[in-house]
Length: 296
Picture 1 (cartoon, rainbow, N blue to C red):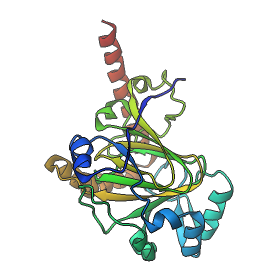
Picture 2: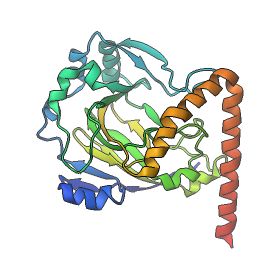
Picture 3: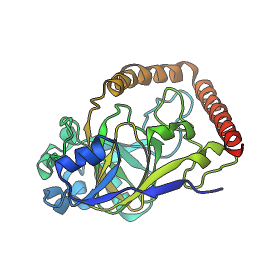
């Protein structure tokens, strides 16, 4: 067992539009921005008690850390319960139950008045502000977003750990074909370098987010998230402007996702096992070649 190599994500206190575009957006470099939300109503009001009160009787789908098996849909929830009951759990105890992609405009439109879209140079897709919830100890499988959007991710209530990997690191991450995540058997907190030798060459960027922090995640960046306390976050997204990324986004959304679910329904666990074995063999061969090259 070893540890994944990481360096801290750069932090700034507020930022001008010009500096953000020049230093971070154009070079596609992550940055954590402090103070961006200080004037928002959300900064002062948004906590678990507030959400619990606003959405108490809503029934929400919940996800956990168990890998999808057999003919399960690749985005199938583990269970569901009322929001009030779920938040009571994450306020009081560790749990790996999470809420994924909670559509704020559809579910809690009254909260839209509590924040504003920052004028930092991103052209936000304003129809889709989404929330994510997690209990203490819950982890989000390393992945990148299928729509390849540039993301501005805001955390509320408690703290969370975020590790990012650039698209150039994909070759070391054991990415599964026709998916946007890696092998679900990998634990990046306790990586097994003997079984997954390519992880030794992986280089990440890390930040611990607190209430009100904003993290810029460029298009295609992988993110591995751990909730250090029960809490929630909001993501605002800006669709990619680069023609190559835009075409990849169309492929992911309109072909890859549907093809994957079709193959799962048709072949079940055989399809999943085939992809995982192929990924393991291919990536380990790459790691062996790299090791040989470095030893010359």
